[in-house]
Image 1 (tube, helix red, strand yellow):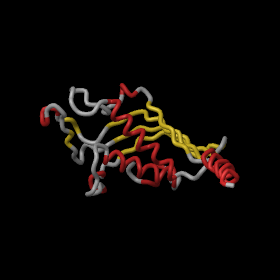
Image 2: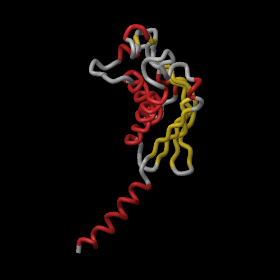
Image 3: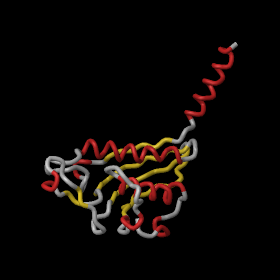
Image 4: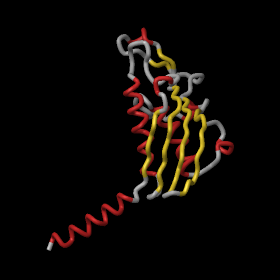
Length: 168
């Protein structure tokens, strides 16, 4: 008797997964990014940075309606802050100030099936990022995560053009 219910449940699960939203991330020439790795021998490697940015962006898929696909090409990364390698040997230290906001250059396509909903290329930054930063923000990429999350909500979920958003 159980087997009779299992097969339809599996079929329903497979159908739901087939229509789930998807986000894919591609890094275009990451070795040429402005600031995605510590080039001074301390701090995070390029591999670690790209892995974390991929995890952040792909996580946005849970906020997309089923059946939609978002492809994001990351063309440049400039992390918040500047490196101070001698301040915390051997790990380095990243000093964040209001003159060193995070910045991404992105190309993206949002589609549903074969229909393109929106597409574009833009620089995403926020010179006021420290004013909006959460006091509870923690982790190595908290500012970058907040910036990308805000961009995703405004541009992809709400569909507002860049001119209406203010600094981004």
